[in-house]
Image (cartoon, rainbow, N blue to C red; front, side, top):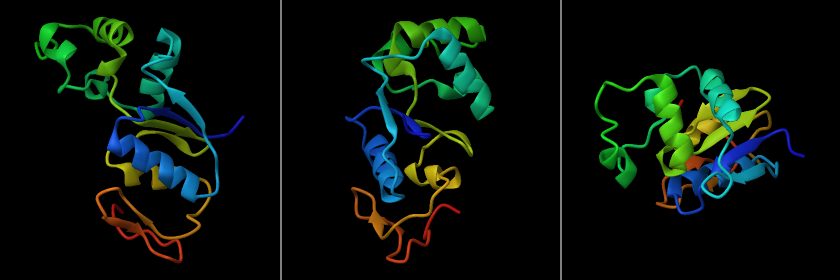
Amino acid sequence: MSAITIYHNPECGTSRNTLALIRNSGVEPTVIHYLETPPSRGQLVALIAAMGMPVRELLRKNVPPYEALALAEDRFSDDELIDAMLAHPILINRPIVVTPLGTKLCRPSERVLDILPCQQKGAFAKEDGEQVVDASGKRLIGK
C-alpha cells in the first residue's frame, strides 16, 4: 500500500492533474474513488482535522445537493454538514491528498507539491497547458 492516498474523482480536471503530479514524483498512490467508496464518518472527520479547515470549507457549492439542501444557510452544525457530505459524497470537495508530510485539499492541483515527499521527475503541464514543473523537476507556479 502506498504512503500517499488521493480521494479522487476521475471526472474532475483538478483531481486528474493532482493524480498526475503525484505520479510524476515517481509514486503510485492509493486512489480512492470517493464517489463510489465514500469515507466513513470517522475518516471524514479525521481528514478535516488533518487539513485544519472548517467543515464548511470542504463543501462543494456548485452541485445540486448544496442548493437543494439549502446548505448556504448558516444554520447547520458541523455534524449536520458532515451528515450531508456522507449522504451526498458529491458535496465533498476534491481532491484530498494524504502523505507522510500532511493532508491537503489540492485546489489548485499544484498544492500537492507542498506535501509530496519526492521531487518531481520531469516536466509537467496541466491539462489546460499551464506549465507547473520544468524539465529539471523545478516548480514553476504556486509557491
